Length: 355
Image 1: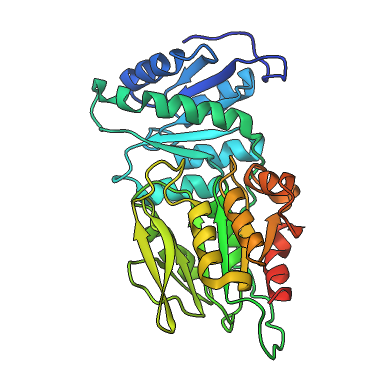
Image 2 (image 1 turned 90 degrees about the horizontal axis):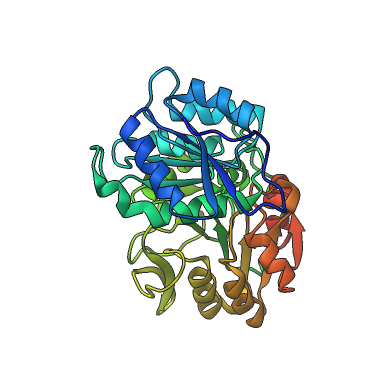
């Protein structure tokens, strides 16, 4: 086990200190080698399960933890839950996607900051295929300044719908990333069953998870939540979650608006991209668009917010104090595009007030 003196990273230190957690000695060795390719990343220790990881995290105070899900004694989900109650550390899940879909969502819901899919369950050099992705995700996680995810066991109560003669909004479009799974579960169920306009969401999530997540969110919500499909008519009372791996945009056909899914453009940092959703909403709905930019790393949504504002629409951003990662909202605010900054707890009410 490779260790150095304990202590959190500081602003004067460029090195990201990482704890690697996996029950496979081969994977621990390979992940250590992959991360060590970067001069800005150092693996300070490895652990074979969650129990050992909790002890090492307390002793060494790493900046980032990479973690498998299926481990003896204490698995990845339980580890994330336990670690987040002790100290909020950016945790990147690294696991086989198709075998643990529910567990990946549970780990993200508990506060894990990101997910990297192992290319194989076997001990093979194919792990190196994700080396660059893992290094970049770890460095981004270290910069994120993650906050503890606040999860409630209770189903949020819907906000009462005000009496409206007519609305000034025809669609609400939402962009969210890191911290999004738990944020949306706290927010979308607060929208009432008679919410008068459709809602479309881009949530940065691995391919294969958005349909499962939409079903889980639907179980909690008064509104009907679905993963958007090609040609879906965009109607009030529905929440459309963009399909991971495809951009979600809109097309107006006669008096109807329908969903369009596309792989293009291929050069966006994310697919689906918040910018693409916002730009399309601005083009189709014009000034009657309300955009909402919530917790997440990076700046996806900033350019799209500019499109909405240019068409006369409005933008809400999540306030720093409730963001798991205050990146995307910050970029919109610093660009002078936010009409109001609102905490997660008050977001549903703020949207209703702007209808």
